[in-house]
Length: 433
Image (tube, rainbow, N blue to C red; front, side, top):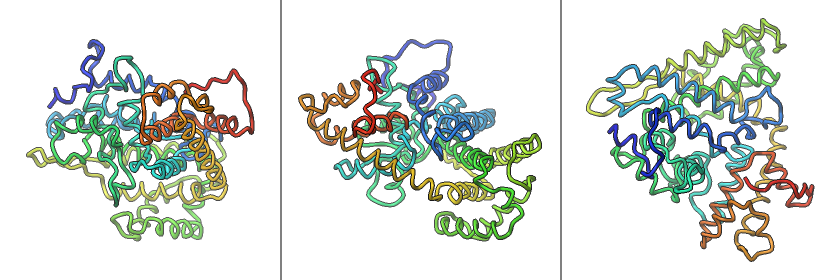
């Protein structure tokens, strides 16, 4: 199995050096332009809101750090590593660095809009950030002229597959999926040696996913308390405020989690009651120290909440302590209640969806008209090369989605203003992405 884990889809790669295969994978993801782009992508609110808030890149770096520490802890147990089929901290970190590469400008808002636009254009596997990330590392990223993608090892690609299946007609696998049909060959190659079922996550993917949950639940909450948006100080003392939040959160979680409202309420109170600050955040040394102590204690608890059950015979199962899962679910609800559902964010998202729709319409029309069309020049040069090799609608639509998904939010806004005549920009502005 170790040999299969280290294989690369394109065998004629660069010569081996002093690094392990996992280290080379981690470095390849770290230095790709797709990772740098995430500095200009929304985590919860726009990166233009200021340095107080995480952007998608700072979130990714924290997921990578948490994921690596988790993997380092488990990698000390050679019997466990053998039982789960391999567990490499370098590959967990590489997968964490890659896990959000497919997020388009404006985050989840644009992801939903792009999915609708792509599906309505006849491409039924639509758009999904996780599937786009797999497409980037296997096909779109460029590091060698001889083959597409980063040519990562099989084990690292398997670790990236948070949702290891293509889109299905209904159910949960219709809402979340990790591979487009365009990359079916690469997916089959990744999963082939690991046996069935192919929709099972690897141990490394499980660690990456839990690290993602921890970073989102804790660090984004910290941002919005510091900004005065999530009133942690009130929730720990004010019963009326706590009741309003719980009523809203429990209603949203109904039927989505395998526990009772009473258990969720208890989990929330276990988290919030020890919060030591009784007033809004003011940035004093006492507040900063208390907040850091609060978040560090949560991260420490959640890191220790994940274990592997390895009864033998090659059958293993990841276990996350129910108490930790419930607490993380409720911490995420704080962001939904106080930030995502706020009307001020809703008005921004309305405009963002319009930008995505109009860019898609313009690029799709230019792609359909082809090289002889009057609007061909609005397409970035590197994607013109891709489109010249495509003759069917399905391929053109997928590339149009690639163009939009490769932009930062400022690039998308400026491109939209330019193409709609709101602001003509300059002839010196680069159009290549």
